[in-house]
Length: 271
Ligand SMILES: Nc1nc2c(ncn2[C@@H]2O[C@H](COP(=O)(O)OP(=O)(O)O)[C@@H](O)[C@H]2O)c(=O)[nH]1
Ligand SMILES: Nc1ncnc2c1ncn2[C@@H]1O[C@H](COP(=O)(O)OP(=O)(O)O)[C@@H](O)[C@H]1O
Image (cartoon, rainbow, N blue to C red; front, side, top):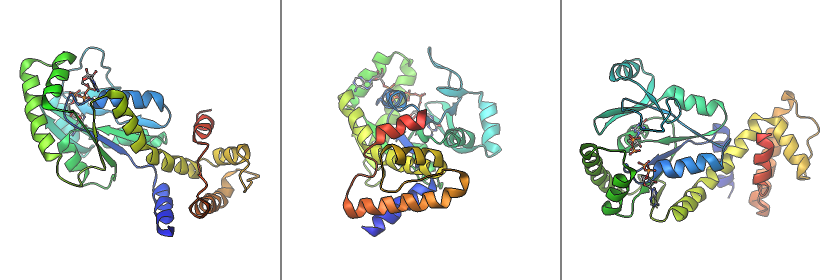
């Protein structure tokens, strides 16, 4: 019990864990991610990758991707600007250090949408994300979704299906992901995704307490916590840490939910 509490506190102090979403092209990653970013605006932030592929209608430079030439991308990789990069279906993709830092600087949980090669490469870094694989119910459904999306040429579609078959096989390796979500019914898949991310959000809130004493003061006052914080200036950081630790310990002893007021906290955080 104490070990669990210690681990939770330690992770909280290290900052919110990033989240990696992966899975075959057409599995529904972007659909789920867009919904998540909209519902939890101010909680999750998207790591905008670089790519050499052309923008699709409706996609925005700097929002969906940073669209760059192969030369620019290769130069960036050579300069060490990227955490990882991969070649996918004839185009280059990569996560820049700046993309992740930009999200983390806003104190948001960084979400990456990357392919299987990216997962393998990120595992060699110290990013330490939560890995979630989004899988289609079958290859037939995947093909139908990709065709219906009408974004790919026949050649690009075939390449994606071939890679998908390979990646789906690789994905069966035990221990590769923290969670595998089969995206059959969208509502069901989204509910599962939110469930998996609940703990990540809880720890992120704890982190935000450390970084924002004012917020903690507001929260404790609002919810008549047993410990009252009178002042919230920077000099009281140490006391705030102690307070959070005591409350966490109380949670493990009394089983009273530490963050039962999650939604209110989010509202305070936004305002
Ligand atoms: N390794 C890596 N893969 C990425 C990155 N950005 C996107 N991808 C992956 O590249 C693949 C193709 O992405 P995209 O061209 O947007 O097509 P879509 O996934 O079919 O919508 C997907 O599997 C993405 O997850 C990145 O920065 N690194
Ligand atoms: N559960 C689902 N049921 C039916 N269609 C879906 C579902 N999830 C996603 N789609 C559709 O499938 C297509 C591929 O989804 P998308 O999010 O673009 O996949 P990815 O980002 O993994 O390539 C999109 O047209 C999307 O609207």
